[in-house]
Image (tube, rainbow, N blue to C red; front, side, top):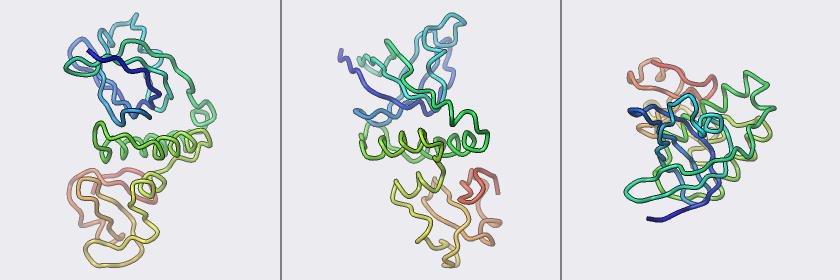
Length: 183
């Protein structure tokens, strides 16, 4: 059994049986999923801290999988939460991180850049795409080759122009200009 004390951004939480599983982007370990024992209970010690977009200090225990042992919220980014537009943009950017980030691949530069953008209330899908090497300012449409891209399909790692966006797959698409939509 190994124990880790790490800094983490909460990408999301999902229920699993009587527990919850937190999707964490950590500075030291990269993206990990950690089980919160009794995380769905009303008196859970984790529930107040594990909201998406929180910066946490966590203690993880790993035997066969990661389990959350202790957690303390370090920054809830109140200025970000005060702006509905900035909050929506950050949640869409975190959706992209969850989709694109491999598990257990640390990226300290990405972690620090995302943390700074959250503190400035300026985290966007474009920011995450650029940090992951998919800069939309130099991208071309995967179908027709136009330089003015409008959308990005994370599962394929492809950009599309506005016309080709309308004919895209029935998958979740990250609209580079407007957020998340379905074709």
